Length: 386
Image (tube, rainbow, N blue to C red; front, side, top):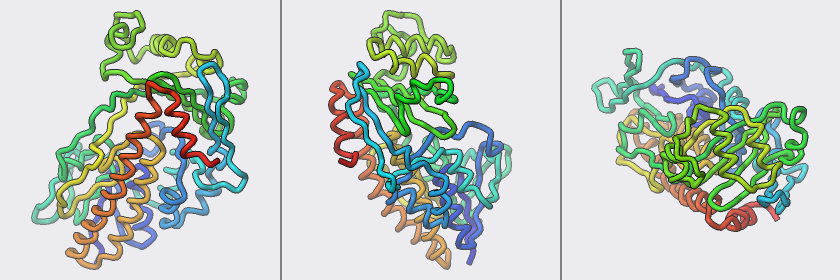
């Protein structure tokens, strides 16, 4: 029997799920709200772990292609003190492929492959338990029914309300992202400072992280503890002696405020902000650490829709492995009753693993943006190879 299956969301989780089903000759409908594959920037770079994301790609038959596209040298990690002193400088071995980097756009294109994605299909509601299956309503007024709807539609999932009332909550930590282009040619000193992978500087309740992507592109993230409305009064919330509100769309005003926030740090480090282009405000939200739900026949969740965590290199990896495992479970379920039991068993496995990682990443975030910067250094000493 071929179940009618839809996955909502064309990110790593949804596309991995669809690719594994495709490998097993099982039809799947991929629904993505973006109007086209290049409708918006795909994001930064991901390190795919051998036991998580790479395992998922193996299940999809894509591991060799990934290895040809990935950047093992991107595993390098350098930590500086706020005065510019190099505190740690980890370099991968030539044969180290434990966590190679790949740009999100490159990974997306690899996963898309032969898949038929229905672009521009924003979902407004998912209604389980109708006579003909699970009803999906779209923003354009259309609707369709399926035997299984998989929500892989991220932090603000439109599928989640069909199984859980949970909504993401603010962590108390905000990230502002900027980027540098053609860094090796335009900013060679910064290119040398960053190295082949990532570079981080940790201060009191704040940090700056620069991460290489391919093609000389660098993502820069400024993280700091602040209330959600920190930009409305920089004096009261951030101690920056500026009472007027900050317009987050004003590039130069944001740059000036960030430079003031990181005042006193080494000039080469602050150049990451001085030379940044647009600034994007990204408050960090999470779901409850042990987010579960009463099983709902015909609907389930993957990735951030199920277990939104701090962005510490695990979320996409977990999401991809979940997508691959769910697809394998589905293909092994011959009848409608078997399908429901397969999904139920998958959810139990997902919840247990995701709960462990959610605790780890929340504890990690607390140490990376800490009143004591040595906590961040100690965390890296624990996770980096000696």
